[in-house]
Length: 235
Image (tube, rainbow, N blue to C red; front, side, top):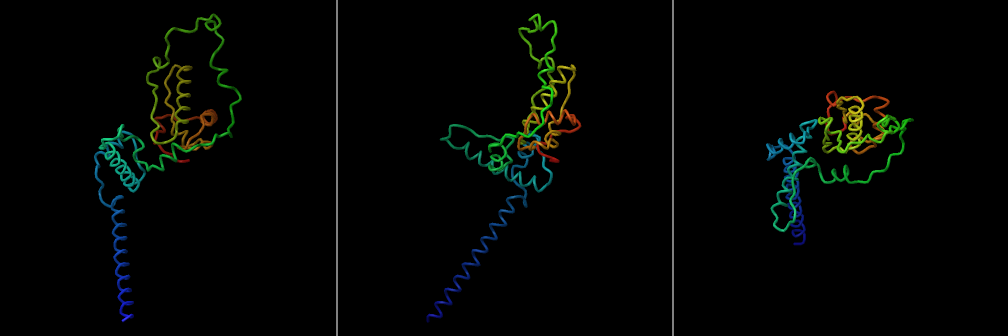
């Protein structure tokens, strides 16, 4: 009698184990399907969003994964905006293809100050204000002056999801310095600085001093020759 009970219990445990294994396999296959083995919904919206923020991916696998992450964030936004007790609305932006931990790592974590850089011998400030008659006479200022009116084609640019503010700021400094002193527009490539200024950290931050020192010693490509990709290509 006892042996029959023990045998029945063993059979029951075996059946439960098989059923559990089947559910695990089904869930695993479903998760794979969700992440790209079958077409994901909102394809048109996804493509419009990629075009709006000029975001591309190096492979089909990465595109599928990022679409899945974007869709997860999109659905979360829709659920939030449907709430009647919320005091604010959410929307898609250039970070919507990122997991929460990726956004935190790239944009919110504390970064140490980089101290190891070689500063040019001659400060730039000593070259920008020559001693001319208008300066000594005290009449060098006008009531209303804006360099942007002189060079309206020089505008602020979007760094997208890459933490390259240091590269964009450095490119802007070079562009404006050239425009003011040469009277010509110059389009400098932030992507060149992101990829090649090894003393900084690409999309994870950097220092303007590093970028300007690199540009002084090595030169920097134009935006047309080295377009922006919002990621590190060679670093």
